[in-house]
Image (cartoon, rainbow, N blue to C red; front, side, top):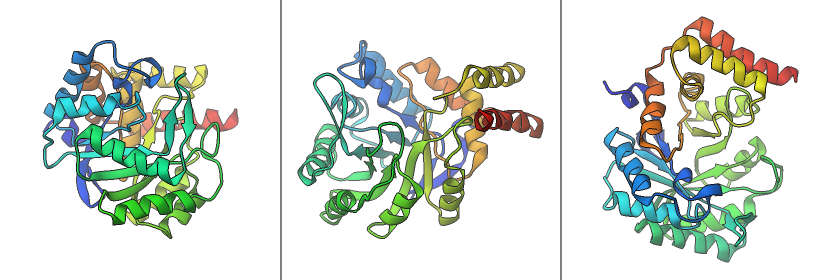
Length: 293
């Protein structure tokens, strides 16, 4: 059994995917803006991901913008029937590289068409609505006007399934009254566990949860704790963080990103890690120190 097969599978939009996927964000230039320094290397990473068994890629046309999707098309089209490409809409990049909300109906519609064109697809497998009410993380506010536009695009046959990104539990509940939600993508990791209750609720409903920034926002003390555990296991901190997420809940799908083939293989090998009860207790201490702070 290969490393990625050990991660298990979960349903995403009615299709079974391996729980270890790939996030394409880092294929663009610095700051996720402009072209990569080495386009051939970016192409190689995508092709290696598929060769390793990845069947779930996360992207967006505002990565670059346009750059990442165009690289995905060049590397992988025509796409394998078992590949699920998840994209997201709700933001635009400024000429200075800034990230700006793009919730107007015409902006959302254009974003779907941009993703279709640059990926070379007739229909998008899954589209996540990225909510940007808050500067840092989710913030309350009604998503009905924007999600209604995306649901209409789904009815037109341009989108198969709908997900949400950077949302609160209240927004997930609101969204489920408008459309079937197949996944939620939020920041979550060992140190930042504000979505614990949401993850468990989604698991009961058979809905995927996709955490981003598996090592984001750690304090030096927390990073030290994680590094100590990794050293004892002969692994990297990222591998341990990913392995813990796989253990956290069966509905968690991972999308670690990298622009390096070696790092890609390293990330996928996280599924080989066997975390003992003692190790899990030590890792839970990372979250405990976050709460104490």
